Image 1: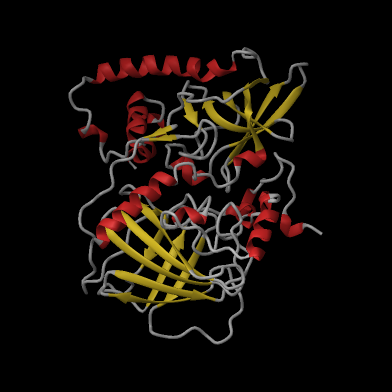
Image 2 (image 1 turned 180 degrees about the horizontal axis):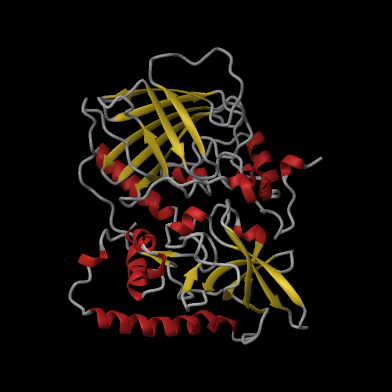
Length: 321
Length: 137
């Protein structure tokens, strides 16, 4: 946030070396670089930065040795580390201090989180040595999807469903009364796509008949003020659990157990039942990591300008005839 | 024990998710072995989701004017990396390095964008699954 604030203060400062130095230090998520780099004179930093900036264009162009020098030159091979600002991200260690509590003693899940669910392969969340109890119908559908990986609805700006996660932050809105855990709880997702989940905490049951939806119908309760349990049914069968296309049907039933073992970590342990595709229920665990202080949810309107498919020549599966 | 188990799960899950940070599948759209290096003039900037884009007017090897459609990370990922919607402006002279599209001509996944004032900005997101994806320490 330091870099952004510094840039916003005056657009005329945007090109000055001290701003760029702050941008560099922002990658390491140090709250205030002014107090982290005190002993070297500013002149030294400017000199170092000058050498760095001179070297950057050279290092960035080096991989194109075969055809560089003019406009529109193409080459072969991976670029590797290109010396661009922001390519390397240094993350601080996980904050291991105790989890925060609401006034009534319930653990607070507040914070901006990334992770907490599968992206590439839901089987990565299984206990060591276990495999998914896939029925033949699931194996057959996964083989089809492996040959049609660009049909993943997530690529076409559709929601990720449950329990899939995205690279973008989410936030629990847990305490809307200010006094403790509330009868309503929301999970707000920034990315792909801007969406929310509503969890009823007032003791109601699932309706007998539900219209299928991307996020289903969720009811929740707390166990010992430490574990948030979310029980969800009423899903549609459209989303994929992961990029591999691990499937589910409208019979999907998820039971999520969210805990916060320390300040910097959420753990989501999910039991999944779906007799259409799985021989028995299975349980996976995924962790989410607390984002740097000052980061906030940003806008992400995926549908505005989704050109996915054009570079690779793929057709939107929702428009296929 | 439960807490310790949770922490272990957290650590290993984070380690295991290293190459997961891409919204859209790189390998289905771009060729990870086909690089480009383009110098030209920014003709349009789209600060939009799911990916920010900018367009670069340049000349091809025969001297014909062509416009490249350059893909960046999402606006929020770029903003967390120090970009703003004003980082690139129409008329700016830029040098862009990245990976070319698998099928379409003059489309690229921009990795390094060297701006008019000499900064080399990373056009992707950290750990975004590209061959040179952002490295996290």
